[in-house]
Length: 185
Image (cartoon, rainbow, N blue to C red; front, side):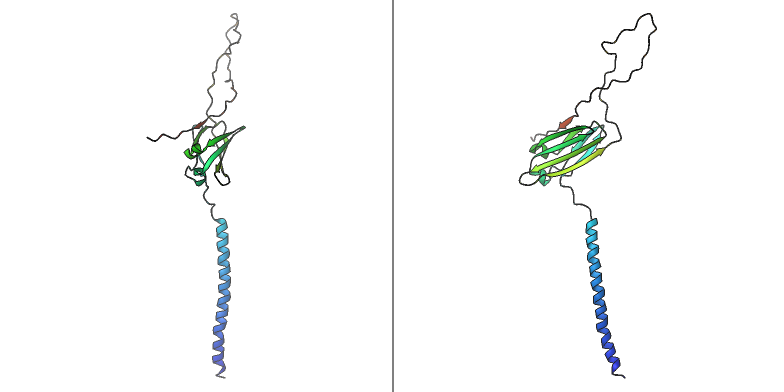
């Protein structure tokens, strides 16, 4: 019976090797699946135009990366502004695009900005951003006073003091200021 013992030991080595191969195979498959799910959850690549907005007293400072490849090759662009119910499109020339900045006076608390750049020899590049503010836009100056055609009170009666609310003026179109680059000396 002694000759069967060595055969048994030689059979253990290939058995362990087969088990190790099966475990390695499944571990490799799970590792590959973990990489695939991690790549799905990875953050999106950086935005090509890097459109951004900062606000100070109702004035929106809209900027973008003037060194971005699409802007550097841009023939022209369009900045679409949806400010509450007001909408406008601002055509930007190549030099205006490369300056990388527009100032805009908002009229409402909800402003959508969309910049579309048309680089030469390729499709357009688009980015958009939305600004929602809980602060009211700065008030427009309103002259409060008596109307020109107001009737004069009769002298027999005591003067009547009236409280009047400011008269709302029709909203003026929003201000957009295109800044010009400084001249080099």
